[in-house]
Amino acid sequence: MTERRYWMMLPASRSAAETAEAARLAEAAGLEGVFSYQLSSNPWLPLGPAALATSQLRLATGIALGFTRSPLETAFAALDADHLSDGRFTLGLGTSVRWWHEQLYGVAYEHPVARLEEAVTLIKAVLSGRGGELGRFDGRFYQVDFTRLAHKPPLRPNLPVWVAALRTAMVRLAGRCADGLVGHPSWSVRWTLEQINGPYAEALAASGRTRADVEINLWTVVAPNPDVAESVHDAKRHVASYASIAQYEPYFAAHGFAAEAAALQQAVGRGERNAFELVPEEMARTFVLCGTPDDVRRQMEPLWDVADSICLQAPPLRLDARAAYDQRIAETFYGS
Image 1: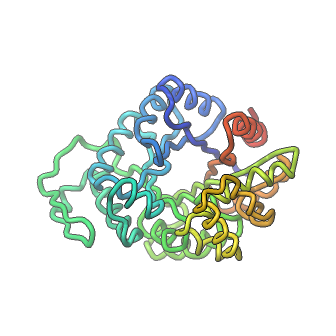
Image 2: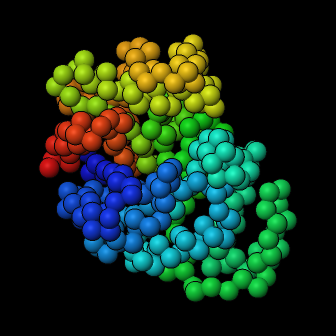
């Protein structure tokens, strides 16, 4: 059996010392890398203390929103992060949902797949150190002139760009133009295998590349718990957080849970605090690996047929309950 490689999420909005310690502990536990995410936090700032505290740990944005900054700004941030970490950085990009961009960040979101593909083209040109060769770029979404672009040479010309995906269109985009695919934390095991062995493999082949040319990192939510009923109950919170988003309804409908997703949207819209209780057990088990630690370990096995690495996450719970799950995850999978 090949070595299993794991990642984790850095806690957001912590002090530099706390962030550095979290990264140090991840490296000491043998994890391959850590992600720093962008939702109500900045994905770049935690990478500085994490880089200083470690020497081998890979660092990545997981994910940086693709449209909240210009492609050039994103590329420069990635180059800085790679220099800070001595070549250990990976740029993770994604589209997230419309309301985050339009209502919170106040930026355009229309045609997100095509928009992100254009952004990735520009970003990769800068990351390679060959942005100036691109000259003028008059695309559908971006019009830039790189003819006078000058910046410090990249530490390496092949800084990897990973694209996060939920549905098939983004999976295909990752296969066409990205160096890696990040699986969504709500991917079911069935969906994961179908998407990677189907649309992703097809797009990768059409790009002239092979599976060995890219990396696949799955974000898998797990709830290992000796109390199986509690495990399922806690998993419902994660499922509800995504199934209540209208933009994600087609994904849940593809699994046969259209009515449940619609009911969750309505309940959350009414402000019901316990809307997660509407998630049936079958739905919870479809999108979260539930049960005892041994149960969860067995359920995860098929994912290793397609993944290079997996970022394990606990359900979204209060701090003490979350910490208990994090400890069981470490004991079950990292041996610490």
